[in-house]
Image 1 (cartoon, rainbow, N blue to C red):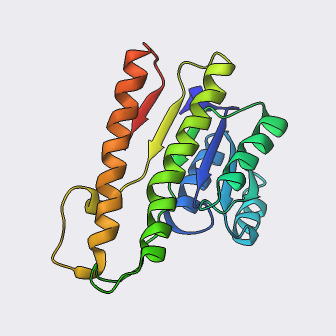
Image 2: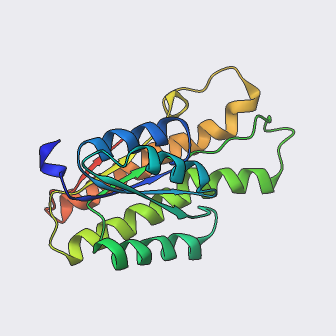
Length: 188
């Protein structure tokens, strides 16, 4: 983790759970972490509790279902920190509703957060890295077991579809980076 000291990480879904825990570890390792979520109050509280750590945590409000919010997030990161070295696409969203009872609006919301936002954040992070000559950056896409198997739980079927899609686009992005002979890593 020492090589990341002083470098910039973006963590989506940073307000609670896994995202908040990731922020805490990265700040402790000396990274400048940007925590993004729809609500930033909990991220600001976490930031205040981490003041004595080597790194820092900055909260940025971002609705991942809105392309303009995502683009604004990256503009803010560029203005404050120069760019992103690590992008952790942690945010995930699920409705507990079967395919037979779900609505296109619910499905679209899950696709927007779990797939489209990941693709756009990854694209913008890689652009940021390449513009600055960063060839050792890292994209981490947080998935779930739902991206590997489909349980007999009707309320999880569409969510699992989004996580299978996440696995596919992550592998596609890894292949594209390999084709460019880039050392930017893509992990799930």
